[in-house]
Amino acid sequence: MIYLRTSIGIEIRREDLLISSLQRNLAGGVFTHFKRIADYRLRGRAEVRGEIDQFFRSNRLSRDKVVLGMPRRDVVIRHLDLPLEVADNLKQVVLYQVQSFEPTEEEKFYYDFVPQKVNQGSKKLVVLLVMIKRSLLDAHLAVLQELGIRPAMVTSGSAALTNLFLSGVKESERKTYIIADLSPTGIEVIAVRDGTLVYSRESSRENAAPQKQLLFQELELAVAKIRMGAEESVEKIVLTGEDSASIHRDLREEMAGCELLGTRIQFEMPLENRSHLPEAAASLALAHSGLIRRPPVRLNLLPQALRTRQTPWAYVPAIALGVVVIALLTGLGFRRMVQERILIRQLDQQIAALKGPVKRVQDLRAESEAIERKIRYIEGNFRQRDMNLEVLRELTTILPPDTFVTVYTSSNRDGSIQISGLSASPPDLVLKLERSPFLMNVAAQGTVFKDAQTGKDRFTFQAKLER
Image (cartoon, rainbow, N blue to C red; front, side):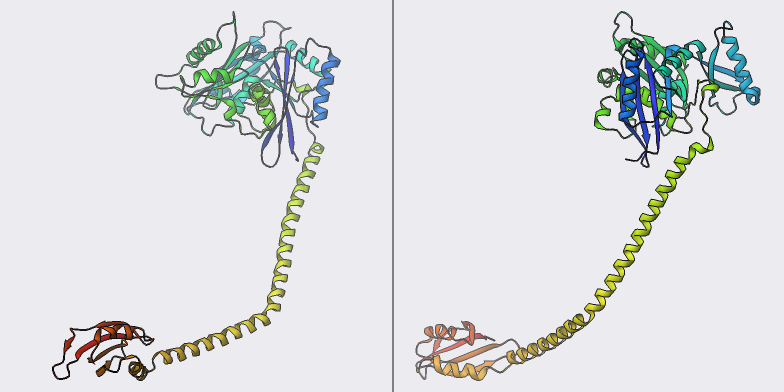
């Protein structure tokens, strides 16, 4: 399969590195590979680097677009309420705010900020500010450099999960969502309101406290911190992380609005990666943040000096690939048109070759139809012939000598006849008449009575002509 872009998300989760690759083709994103590097700090650098190199080499993955996610405990998140007048000089104002958070010259911060949506008519500008100590980020980058990884972007895992969640939400205005990342060691709760990140907090499990109880506590704290009104409510509670499936089974009957983040992810993925989806959600979200152009929460904590800037020549392979794809699609369309014209020409030739035989068949059909019409005419004339003479000849043959026919009437309209006469044995006459091939439905009409002059029985029979 041809992939147009590749983004690698790397999450630092305690002592492990979680690596996910998200690749884009013409149909959309595909979650192609996942790897968990356990205890990367405690093991030898050469051993861990060999394992990472093997992962990238065997799966043919590029390291040009690597997004590193900082754990929540390592970053500082602040929401600044500033007057609207500073919007034109926002960068300098935010710098002053960052300097106010720095206790000493040695403890400097790397930072980035995102202006958030404000209500129409509001006189304040809300800015999401994310900071990390320079010494801490430099230490992470130094370790990753030894492992052969040079991130192109460093962001917060909270911001990446927010971007991934909002990509599956059609309408987020005036709605509040809570995302809970559940791991065996703790919980991170993220609140999203009006399509922006408004709250984030990580808490660790102490004294093996029940995960469900800790979740309820953090949810109550999040609702209190974001200051929801009396008529406001949480639209959805979305769970992710290693323990999300078990907690969801316990909560789905108690909370109707509780669901798993995996059900909202629209990426294609192999079956084996679907089983890793709960633990890979954060690293997959990081890869997603590096793949889309305008994420809702765009943060990059990487120092400007370490950011790679693509020159115009860097786009040449992508442009060349696009031209090749367009040429192939054009050739495919042109090939189909040529094939259709060849097929039409062949059909015209076959139609012209069949015109002679078709004409002969049509002539034969017309001739046969004319013969059929003549046959029907002759049969009609034959059915309409006068059969009375044949019936009278038949009667002289089948009637006994002591029987005389005095009256014979027939109707050409319905083929009925009436026979009257004298006979010494009238009961046998019905059977004799029905045996005739010219008569059917023979029945006596009226009563049979004896004639006073001849002493014979006078009869009258009704019958139908066999045509």
